[in-house]
Amino acid sequence: MIKKLAAIGLGAVIALAPLAAVAQTEQLAQAAPAATDTGAAPAAKPATTPGTRGSHRRHNRRQARQAHRNARASAHHKAAPAAPAEAPKS
Image (cartoon, rainbow, N blue to C red; front, side, top):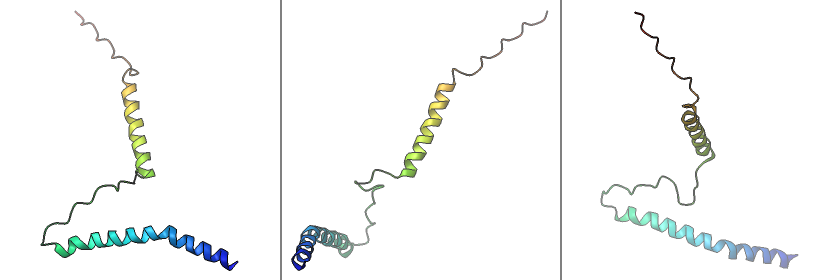
């Protein structure tokens, strides 16, 4: 039982070691520009991170907009034709 727990703990250490290294390099990368900053404006943050594909809410709103546009585009031929102009009475 003890050997099994030791093996699980060792496996966890091996599996999670790269995450600690990444966290340290990100922390150093964020701290480095602040130390050398001479009053310049901070770099612009990207709108979305590279791994993000968007939210469920954004998807639903886009689908609704697209459905509205499609409905308007296909409805133009369904409109009732204009009434013919009356002939002038003479």
